[in-house]
Length: 280
Image (cartoon, rainbow, N blue to C red):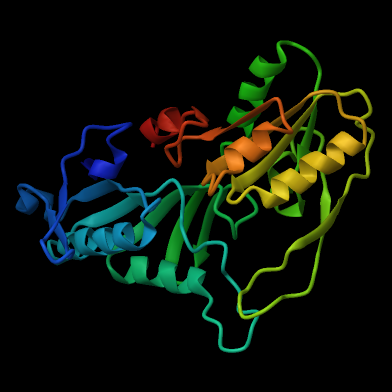
């Protein structure tokens, strides 16, 4: 399988796709020697975050060009934006996850490989809309990093909520439960009202793990609850570290360490997806 690598994947592989901007802001994409990919199996490495809208357009342009040359394309995008919004909640609201996946499929992607997709709760292949998705997980790798941090001391492994339960299913299967308020205003978002910890963490080290940290508000609520239950040292980990606003600093005030994978590049990315990506 031939590799195509976008510039936004240059932290892991040498890019061979050229992406830029025209003076008016429109995206410009060039695949050198494009004809060489005609009829071939191609694995395209292309990130879709942090500039998800422009990176998504870049992906569609690349896929359409390869489709015209009848290439069979597998896309590797470690983090899938819009995956958090898979259901319509408010009247007239657009559920973006299925639309995003269908657009990727229509542009010529035969399979999308991603990590810990928000609307999938297990590893493996699944058809979502028109798109075949292979969902890989970095849960075990995050737990190994936490073992290094705790230096051989025992620690409890706790999923932040039920959505993170599959990350810990082979490590005790413990997860917190969160209570949300009702939807407020015109935005599909329910603030966290509280979290429930139904297990003993008194004087124990704790790893709190989730698929992502965005603004950090849910994680902070979880840390506060775990601390109130008597935890000794707390480490926080997520597969996808968006770390919006000042969330690293706010989390850092409450937890002894915070880290993520490099599915999204950030200063907190301490665990690399490279080994799993190279083995594809």
